[in-house]
Image (cartoon, rainbow, N blue to C red; front, side, top):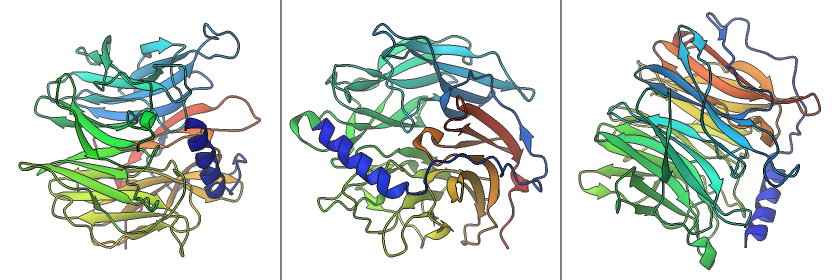
Length: 417
């Protein structure tokens, strides 16, 4: 089953990535961006999968770093999950959260860290749990001293079935953390991928949120005034793979509902999940779709009732973008969307500001990279009055990729009319 799923996935990616993978070197950050400040982390060449986390102590950046050959010799690769904290505008000396030659390191399903309301930090990564290519689990580590040291905390999920588990998102709940993930324990019996959730460290708290979802699109979660909301790519019996949300309220988890009915029928996973952000009862969701007749595009929709209903989507990019979205809300309630845009010689990391009424500012180009999968997913976070971005500068044939980071004032992202 795994080889069949892989062939379908590769066919879908080939369909979506016809833009090619040439590196762009002639389109850096827009020179008109006031306050643009590059701040590359101390990551080794070849590092990948950056992720940003805002904490009460400042900004954290995690990434995967390649190490020496593993126990299997030259054909295996060890990795380390590294973390650095931003202090006075500079990144601290990196700390290894975990390391090993059993990591399942890939371009789309990246590790991350999250902070609970009690101040503790939890980080996750993927590691093999069996001999099959897609037999891996979600492993955890915990820190109670702002990330200076980390202790192993076992598996996130209760099962130890050698199947796919990943695409984790985090949201605070009570004094702890709630995790959401894609869970493949049913696939070993030819069943579907499921969306599950649970409270970290609380046995028996696992629940199924959706019994049939897209196999390898990122999930995302945010905290509204009414409770957590989770965004993900659903999968119908007819292979319609649109973006849905589920909400947790005082009455329990809602039924999954679509953000918008794109009616994208695709016989394989596009590896392109949504992003969600919330402030009070305002919720914004950004996503990629390839649904005809418009074709590949990035869209955004707002909700003013905690995610119960969403307005009509706003077009962010209709020029055959690669997607790979992220999203933040600023203090005024505007959404700032990041994504990978197509350009003639590769791809560009771009930003766009959108008001809750749907008015969009002009796109802002942040950096150039390739259109290859190895360019990964740009990540964003807000710290104070600045927007931070981390991405992979990928240059096929020109040496190792590099993790880059930079910030700019939120006000510098071009306003809507």
